[in-house]
Length: 367
Image 1 (tube, one colour):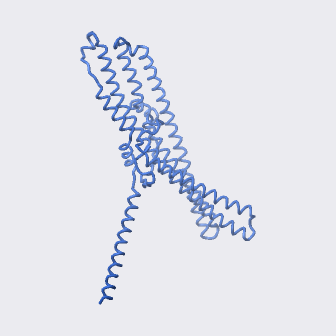
Image 2 (spheres, rainbow, N blue to C red):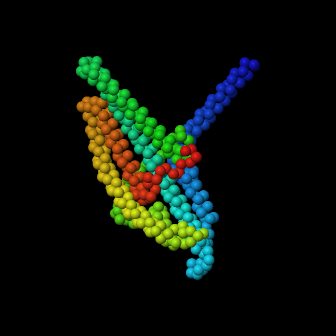
């Protein structure tokens, strides 16, 4: 009886152990799936905006400027009142500071968004570089196999064999470098959007190529109207003209000369904006031409691989030839993908050039 109970107990424990192990495996798999989160570009932007210290600071500065605003009766503008110029100056200055703070918030927000585009596409480009490096390594390893066999039967020299081995080592080094670049790109993106450095979200939004269809003058007009930095320069000139030569506590904070200088600065800013937009527009167009050539290169590489594989089936091409064709195709696709990423990003820059080249605002407390 005791033997039967012992066997039954062991059976129950065994079944229970298998069941618990199965649940543990499911939990582990679920955790892995959770770690490999799906990350759209829109979600990345939302995360970056949500955790941006720079944007939070800009928002606080808007609140402070709003609290500091003062008002003055319209009568002070039309009738002389002792001390009235000081009150007008304070009202005009605090109002301008408030409007300027709001524009600075808009600028910071656009910088965070544009920076997210760049870091998102940097990861995608780095991934494609890894794929290309893996294909190059596969080709080098197949070349080495052929070289070793050829050396054994005396078809190539020891120097040629060592050359094949060197190519493998170089390909391994290139792959390691590409993997390191991918790690760096992920680290930069994760820090920017508030993820742990070692997380590897799956980026699901691939860049879609859409050529620029509007002419450069359309972009120039749009940017001149929407640029927060240009607005600041132009409104500063208007503000200074409104308060020029006002007496405040016995002093003149802003003179006619100051206002005139501000107007010249605003004119220079408009000219610089026009030139920048035109330069960016030409860069985007150049990328479109380069991408068209790269697209043709991919078609040629695909056809070359197709023909090489057919030849290999009938013994007219070797595994080495097929590996080379695949590596060439991977390199061509990597080049096309990189140009597509660059073009998509630069189109975004063309839409908000005021946020381009302004550093990396938006990083959170991790920095």
